[in-house]
Length: 324
Figure 1 (cartoon, one colour):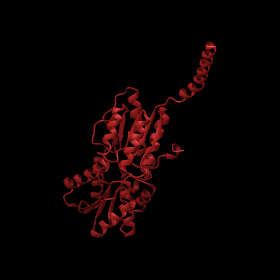
Figure 2 (cartoon, one colour):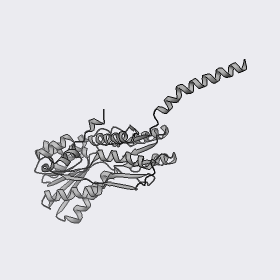
Figure 3 (tube, helix red, strand yellow):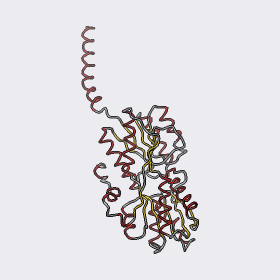
Figure 4 (tube, one colour):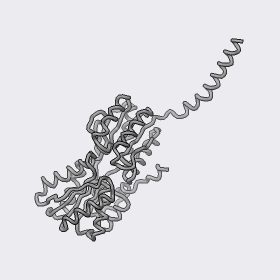
């Protein structure tokens, strides 16, 4: 009887192994959590498409999860902690606030989960690599473009993004330092924040335009700030009168560049950024050397550049190919 029971138990265990085994072995792909600052702007849609493209190419699963708005720092911390608890194989993190995300970054390191930081920096070195546009350099490009547009003299303003956002702070610093060092006849007369919100950006821009009726130029350091400025300029019939250098791009911003509301745009390559962030983790697992910082370069685009093939590809990546 005991032998029969043992044989029955053994048969049951073998049957369970046969049923469970194929399921366990069906998908051994590594899992990478890609955590953006936010999900409501076109920039992040392009980042997601680039990450998914890399996931497909390198046969890794991409889990995309981020807060709706770029100022939801606590929510991004929660998402980080949930991915650590899930024991994902790697994390690509766009840091919304450079101090707030340090503790979860340290928790990921303690759990032996490699983290690539991308887009915006963090007040820590406890990560694999930092992949980002050289935002200080991009701010410098914006300053020189706006200076040329205003004839190297006059009053200009800055519509900044949000305090604590490393990437946009670097842009703003690059802009202000170049204006101060290279263009002594240009004065920055106002700086306000959009707080990553188009409506708030418009209100802030209208406040600036009201206080500075003779403003010669304005620089906006992010997509929501840029959209807010464009709306304010159109509402006040200031398009082409106040020179405007925007940052990032969207369909509406491209239309405003064509229509003369935006004088020039400083544009990143978010698709490439998402792709590269994922690739660094794949390369790490393959034992390839990874640089601590990987700089991507922005470009200044004017209306006359829009028909160039490389500019069309940059501004209109085929995101639908990956976001199905």
